[in-house]
View (tube, helix red, strand yellow):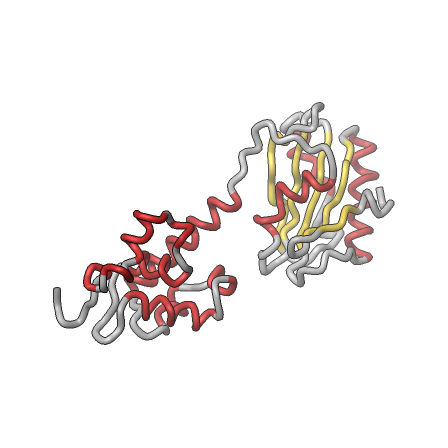
Length: 229
C-alpha cells in the first residue's frame, strides 16, 4: 500500500461496506456504501466512503448519475480514469438489467402491457425514439425494432418502414410507440396524424395497428383509448 491510497480494508471494521454486504446483504447498504465498494479505494486524505459521498453530492443523488460520462466523473476530486470506468461500467450494467426483457412469450393484452414492456427502456431517453412491436396471432411479441430516432414527423415515419418488417416477420399486428423526452405523454397533432396514417396503411396491407403509445416519465397515453384508432 502506498501513502497515496486508502483501501476499504483499512477502514475500521464496523464501517467496512464489503463486510456489511457479506453479513447483512446488499440491500442493507446505503448508496454511499455501494459506490464505495465499486471504487474499492480512496486517496490520501479521503477514504472510499468519502469519495462515494463526493460522487453523490456531485450528481445530487442517484437519479442524475444515469447519464454520467467518463469526462464528468473525472472532474470529481479523487475520481480518476480507472474509477470513472468502474462506475460507468456498473451504471451501464444496471441499466441493462433493469431494461432487459425477453420478447419470448410476452403477451400484449392491454395498453398497460405494451407500456410496461417499453417504459423503463424509453422513459429516460433524451431524444424521441419511434419503436414498433410486432405481434403474432396470439399477441405474443415476436420482434421489436427502433424505426427512427428524432422528432416525430409523418414524412420520416413512413408506413413502408414500419410495415416492411411486419411482412418480413409474418406479423399479424403491430403496436407503435414513441417517447416524449419532456416526460409529458400528451399527444401532439403530429402524433395523431402519424397514427391515423399508419392505421389506414395497415388496413390496406391487412396488418392491424393495435395501438400507438406515447411514453412519458412513468406514465403513458394510448391513442387507441383516446379514440384515434
